[in-house]
Length: 150
Image (cartoon, rainbow, N blue to C red; front, side, top):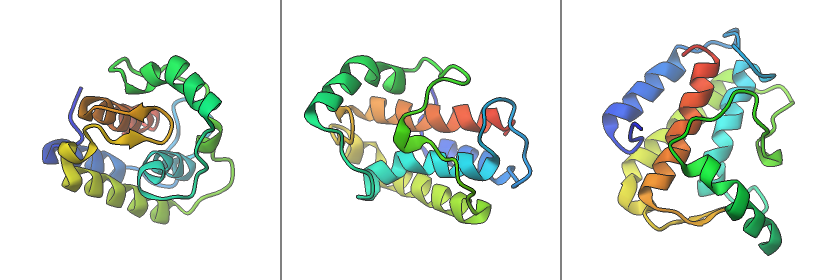
């Protein structure tokens, strides 16, 4: 899997994002391009912003047991798989605003680097290794950029 903490990978992902337009058609799923960008921003909001409630101890246990490996492994996501409630975006979003936010989050993540993330506590899964953080960030972006042919 490519390493989102490497400048080359970050540049490649940003170039793919820059290929998108508000009218880019999805190859599967329900979200439009603006909603997809907002959806991808949630991953970073959970790290950098305090605007999503943390799961209670029971929910965190369930997430670690049944969801964590799907999210942090190198195995690609399946198309049309179930989305966690905090990641569901149904309202209209402003394409340019969401695009700029996502690029800023990706750049911030790359600048902080993998050592910042190694052993960092995840919102839902407990402490993750730098590899697990990378897999979670890169795999999610790659999945949705592929969804829109970028």
